[in-house]
Image 1 (cartoon, rainbow, N blue to C red):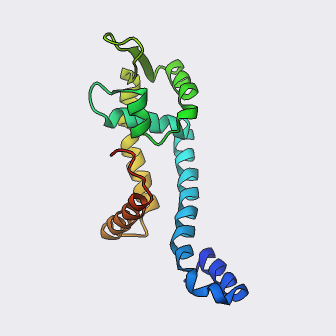
Image 2 (image 1 turned 30 degrees about the vertical axis):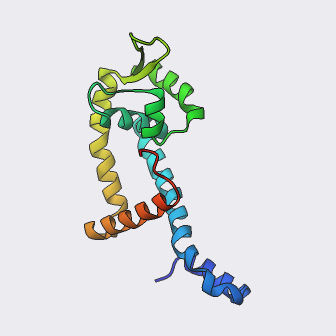
Length: 168
């Protein structure tokens, strides 16, 4: 079976045969890129079906998995989340208006603000995660668990080699 990446690599090999031996990275990275596009579309749809944006789901999950009291400083939040700093203020404003998060000033240092899940936000995060895992399992159903774990380990190695160690 072949896919669009095989076609693309074949076209390049035909047009630039002298580069054919150097095309091997395209096999993986083009598929990773395409899978990223598919995941973005799936996660946006998952969130939209629940009246949320993709980034709002990430905020909920980041705060929930941080453990009690389900609150992080802005800096810690940015390190732990998949959200960019440029968009965080407006996103938190919207989520605060929905009653999902609140900003809490540190009593010892008023300059420090924690982003915290409200009770409603905590309940929503708990409700969403089970559905999210089912959705991800559906996306991965062409692979068995060992294949998924092996692919994950391989991608972790590649990401670490590129310096993606944001939690370190």
